[in-house]
Amino acid sequence: MTEEFVEMKKGSDIAELFGSFDCNLHCLEEAFDVALSDRSAVGTPRISIKGEEENVMRAKAVVEHLKTVIDSGEPISEQRLLYAISGVKSGEEDALKHFEGTDTLCVTVKGKPIKAKTAGQKSYAEAIKKNTVVLSIGPAGTGKTFLAVAMAVTALRRGEVSRLILTRPAVEAGEKLGYLPGDLQSKIDPYLRPLYDALFEMLGPENYQKQMEKGTIEIAPLAYMRGRTLDDSFIILDEAQNTTPEQMKMFLTRLGTNSKSVVTGDITQTDLPRGQKSGLVEAVKVLDHIDDIAIHRFTERDVVRHKLVQQIILAYENYAKKEIASQKKRYTAKKQ
Image (cartoon, rainbow, N blue to C red; front, side, top):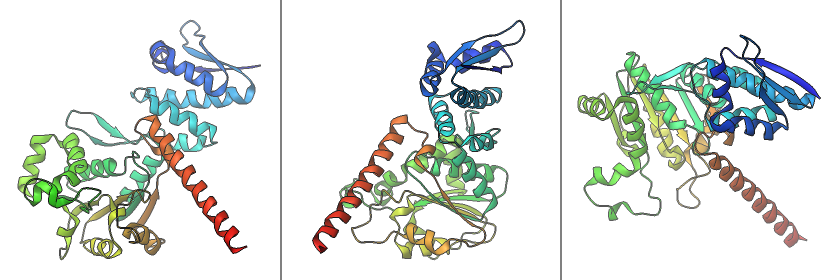
């Protein structure tokens, strides 16, 4: 039996770490088979961790990471707790340390700071800062679009660019555009809604509308990009898995002087017709190893939505692997 201590700055930090009704404490104890308790001495708030040595050291690594989160003034969310536990169990303590001290990427209209919530998100933000073009691939809920919009708004506020251009392909996914009510703009608005939502949170509806009227912000279908040269702009192509190779090449060659481009997509959720190659998949192969172009890959561990989303993604991945293995087995049996 081993006992380790983690000193906290103040007693209220222990309550914050343990969580409401000690929910975080119970989660940590169950995850590492240890016992945590408040063992504060006079004037020295501290947490005791008891159990088998290896388990204790793992739990201590998580507690020390969460301590840095509290020190930065952020709450301990369920997602943050589970991410830290998963990271330590996977032997990625170094990634957690790299993630600590994350900078604020943007401040919303309500004054809420937006920061990277995972090491993958921090690497993504750093890639956008350092490169002119970033291709971001990953499952739903990893913050690909939201963080790109946050950094675009910050670049606009700082005067680094003079306009934001956000686009996505208006690919029909089970519902024909012609059946939707209204004019062309009304028909394409549902496809652009995630971009509107992100901008509303950053700027507020009124400021967003003003920027749209001034032409500082433009949101349009990908088809509207043809023939243009986009100078002094921060350009985001969302849902890029639904582009054709020709559309992707067209978009990437719109890049003008003093511009930055971020391309996001989930190659497991393509709505293109069966047999049609995805432009995003091809671009990753074609543009790999080109200077000033970064390819960033998220995993299910970077999902910051409900914890079930991670499990859903993993379940689908495992199912796909089993299907592939089954098809290979049937193919081998036929050949024999």
